[in-house]
Image (tube, rainbow, N blue to C red):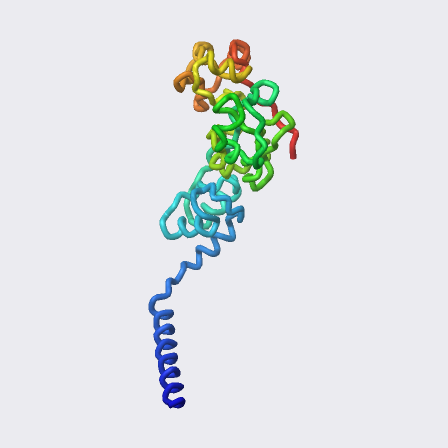
Length: 267
């Protein structure tokens, strides 16, 4: 009886082994060796800024699916040239885009509604009655974006607001995805003048919540032309059109929210 059982189990094991071996041979997915080679060319940041899970997945998408070769922001022009040469195509790098926090309402200019004593995380703070900041659109300052940044390009200053050091930013967009208030945007690196406000509330509401908010007066559109546009009561920069007279636009803004950003000394 024991011998018969042993033989039966051994036979089943042999059959399963043969079946697995055949499956491995005939059902195996053979990856194009160029995927691994292209992965080695990519910077290895695995930031996901290209829209894929990591550098390996992006390389696979280029080789197998014909994805654009220009999607690796951290790699810059040098990596783009290497990818293009590897794929035998021509590609021109567009202008580098960096993250910016479109809020100027620090602790001195934008009051808090209550004392938040929870987890130091913007998403957690935002979940508590919409956040402790009186402005429902302003930076909460608890550092979720800074912790998400893989290169430490974001600093939470002593004023309680997040600041991006553009010379360190690799354009991975992780901070953009992390911010619960959606006030971090990608802008052309060459542009220095921005509307540091994200509130779409009417002027009187904005003035009660922040000393440097956009009140929807449209003076920037009047003096800056097509370099500014209105999104409801909120002025936004149109980065495709340069500002002809930045000093006038900045000086005329009654909310003091149009600011020329000085180059950071970080790094």
